[in-house]
Length: 155
Image (cartoon, rainbow, N blue to C red; front, side, top):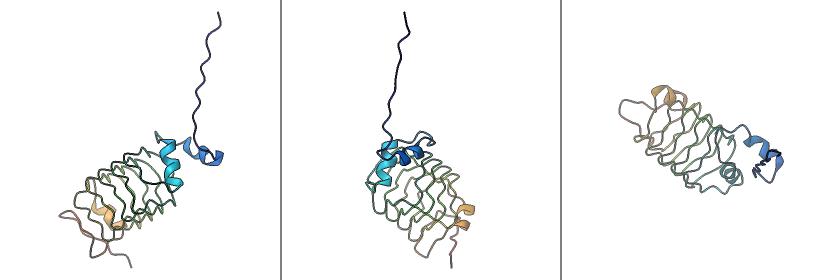
């Protein structure tokens, strides 16, 4: 008796070039990543771990509870979006624009924030935020910070 063969098919993306990008994503939902890249961006609770989301835009959309852990969000347009309860643990946020974003309950533990814009963002309810992260990021007079942390103003 021959052993049964099992085949698993996964639809990654209509574009094979985009599909290749998903292979390395650590647990990211390929459909969610495709939605972000296609500017269909209301994606509460999305699993985006390890995905390359650089140069994408989710401005003013709902991504509360999304998991961006270890993702590449370099130069991502994230202003005025809802990231309440989202996780950005170890996420590359260099050059990302989080101006005015809703961040209550978000986790920034280990996130890389070089030239990240927190202008006008209320960060008082954020977890894992450090002074070192703020020293690399850009704040303004309207940025709200947890007690004991100081803003860094970019010129």
